[in-house]
Image 1 (cartoon, rainbow, N blue to C red):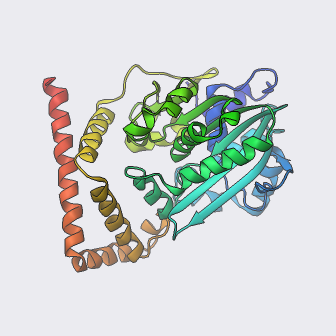
Image 2 (image 1 turned 180 degrees about the horizontal axis):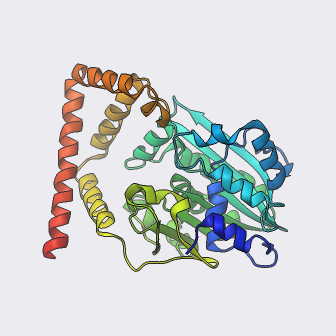
Length: 367
């Protein structure tokens, strides 16, 4: 078995125009969206583009490997994958364009996307998943009770670039990016929907029951391809109407969310028959837990949790590891000052543990 880096070495000499886009290519292109292309790829208003090879060269002229690898997130390998893509015939001359990267703390919005020309009149639109900002993670939590700003931005982006891009469209993303890809495809204008060949959700959260039962969603359903690792956590959040494919991974637990751990054989992923018991327990418990809370209670839970992080000065995931003792002490102090909020978080945590215990019992007893 292999990973996407080994796939690049094996498949890299065969052009996409010779052998078209497959599911592994999709994962690689969606993972590419995690690279910081600010100042490298032309913005969404520009009609210009840049080859992936040139973009990679500019990126590595601006950044050192040490700088990239010290980042505290599982997506840092995206730049390394890009460098290998740039060495291959299959990907080096793909055209990157229409780049947008936007973070707004006041609006609680983290959104990034770009177009990737994969052939004449053929475009893959990649939506970035959650980055290492706390803003991005709060927006993910907000999906449990409302349409979030990045979902609306994804529709606007697809309407804009889809109207200006001739030919066929493939749309995809990893993590939240997968959710955005599906949401945008479902909500975009019908004239653009007619161009869409496939939509790829790589371990991204699902949607509310109302969304997946809607006529618009059901119209797009057959073109939606969802992939989750065998111990999926993020991808099991909320609801899916479409079938999902379960992928083998070399990691454990939440680390399976990392695309670098997904196993590849030939032009396909390595499939397994069922989710692990850990994923089933989390899926069952989280669905039961969320169903016991009103939208108002979910919103209160998220607001209290992330206000605590904001008050402690935590802006990115790296803040948990740099000066971690100071942050821990500050959070303990803040928790004492907000007794009512902390009691709510405590009760919510107990409820989730209780639902997990019920799920374990059901698996063991079959009742």
